[in-house]
Structures are given as C-alpha cells and as structure tokens.
Amino acid sequence: MRKVYLDYSATTPVDERVFEKMRPYFTEVFGNANSLHGFGREGAKAVDSARRKIAELLKVKPTEIYFTSGGTEGDNWALKGTASAYSHKGKHIIVSAIEHAAIIHSARQLEKNGFRVTYLAPNDKGIINPETLENAITDDTSIVSVMTANNEIGTVQPIKELCEIAHKHGSLFHTDAVQAVGSIPVDISGWNVDLLTFSAHKFYGPKGIGVLYIKSGVKPDKIVTGGHQERSMRGGTTNVPEVVGLATALEIALSEMSENSVKIRKLRDRFVESIESKIPYVVYNGDRKRRLPQNANFAFEFIEGESLLLRLDMAGIACSSGSACSSGSLDPSHVLLATGLPIEKAHGSIRFSFGKYTTDEDVDYTIESVVKAVNDLRALSPLFSEFKGDKKYV
Ligand code: PLP
Image (tube, rainbow, N blue to C red; front, side):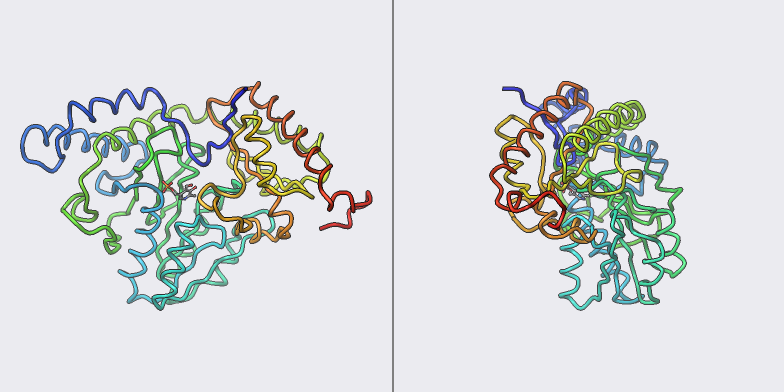
C-alpha cells in the first residue's frame, strides 16, 4: 500500500545531512559540555559554534540564544518566567485565544496563581487584529504573547504591529514561532520581539531540542532550575548532539526555504483547488493569503473528522484532526471554535500539512482517497441523508 505523510506540522523526519552531523556527538564526542577535561571541552566547542551559527542565521547575539527541550518548554518559560519576573509591572497578561496548548495551559496556570489573563479573539479567518490588542492592553499588562503562525489553520499574524502596540504600553512581547521558523521569513530584530520560541523537529531537525530567544536586557525568571548551564538560566546537561542537529537543520532550512516554499505552496494550492472543486459542502478554514505554505485545513460537513482520519489512515495517508498535541481528546479544536466555526463543522475538520518530501503523486493519491472517503462517509451519515439539497444545516 502507498504511504503518504501529510502531517509535517506535527513533526518532520530528520534530514539525513542533519543526522550525519549529529552522529559523532553520540558515540565519539560524548563528553559533558560542562566538564573541564578535553572530552568536555570538545562538546562545549560544538555547542559554542552551534550557538554562534544560530545567532548569525537569525541576526541576533549568541548570548540571546537559550537551548531548551523544545517548543513547549520555550513557551512555558517565556510566559511564566516573564509573568513572574515582571509582576511588579502588573498581574495582567494577554495571549491570543488560538495559541498552542503550551501557551494556553501556561496562561491558565497563571490565572490559578492570581494573574488576570485576556484571551484575544481572532477574526473569522484566524487573524488577530492589532486593534483588538490595543483595546485589551492596560497599564498593568506585563507580557503579550501571540504566535507567529498557527499550527492548525496556518494563519500568519501581524507580529511587528502587535509588538509595537505592546511596547507602546511598556509590555514585553513574546511570539511562538514554532510553525514559522524554516517555513516563512522570521525577522526577530525587525519585528523587535523580546522573546521568541522555536523547535528543531518542525524543520527536519531532531525532536526534544529548541531555542528560546531572549533579547538582551530581558530577564525572565528561571523555570528549569539546576546546574549552571545556559549561563545559569536553564539547568540540565547540555544535549550536544541535538544542539548540533538544531543548528545544522536551521542552516539547511533557511538556505532552502524559498525553493521549498514555492514547491510546497504549489502542491498545497493544487490540493486545495481539487478538494474544493470535487467535494461539495467543504469549508476551507483559515485565511487564503496570510497563511503558511504547508497548511491546508478543511471542514467536511456532515462527517466526523476522526472517521475521515481513520479512513485515510487505512489508505496509508497520515494527516491530523486538530493539532497532534490535542489528539487523544475528542474536544473540538479551540482554534476553529475561536474563529466562529460551529461545533459540528469544527468536529469535521482535518489538517493536511505538506513538506519538502511531498510529491505530486502523493497529492494525486490523497485527492482521490479524500474524495472517496468523504463520499463513503456521507453515504453512511444520517445528517447528510436528512439534508435535502439546500443548505439548511449549519
Ligand atoms: N507551539 C506550536 C505552535 C506548535 O505547533 C508546537 C508543536 O506542535 C509546539 C509549540 C510545541 O513544540 P514541541 O513539540 O517542540 O514541544
């Protein structure tokens, strides 16, 4: 059976070139980067050079790069660390209502600890309007966090404008750029953000390693306390092979980004056009223009997203209903609900995310399989049989 992976927003395979660069740091250069002996110094040298490489690629200072265990930790640190360190400014924080669970759940925890949280509503396409932030921000807002690009519907936010508003009110600004880095240009200094999270496994690097960029002068409290690693800001033995992997993956992703994004966008657009022309009663969730090139998210009316997902899995196709992080729960996506999509349509939504290894044949096979699966499921759907041709059902 053909196997098609269309879940690149959940994770990507490690690029062979990245893996080859990492390999010696598992078995040969295995010293603890904090040890004083030669074995340790070799590891420290690799970490140092990776940090400098990442800083150079992102046009920031090496001292502004902090290695973490991935996007979840970066988001937790950014939000909880600054909320706690800057609580003298006030105990109000602002996040968008469509953030990843790593931010939403951190915000909820802060609420339990006495912080006030405003969840900014997006428009019906999933965009956070700067005016919405302007109306919500107050003198006691310590931090605003809005993701660069959404993991479910791929919408790309006006980060520079949102950050300007936060700064005008003396608040810090964090952006979760986990889905954006490697896919679209990310301009840390141009946007002037104070903190930015990203994670290697979204751009063909290893899982379990990420970066929190912290602008010089910004001092969040520590979240992972321990040894003196990461200039005493984050304890834990440095994961040398993964740090090397992250730097290599970032270098490759940025150097090949324009070429890959043209190819991926073309495949995605052809897929979207075909689905919309071949299947009636389909909603294309998100914004058509301000959107990651790899993302397509559809609500197929009258059917359950999970049933479609399973049918496609049986045909060898991997995609996602909601974000992978919320799978295991059958709750409808908080992102789709925040855009105003009715609960039944949110339940019938599926994300297809394309990547640099996706082929034209993969797309053809998936179009054919989705059309068949949707037709089969609708034939079994009582909702669809009750539906009498005109669109009464919402
Ligand atoms: N933020 C966003 C937008 C994501 O898509 C993800 C992962 O899906 C994360 C954070 C979490 O990153 P990680 O898997 O590296 O912990």
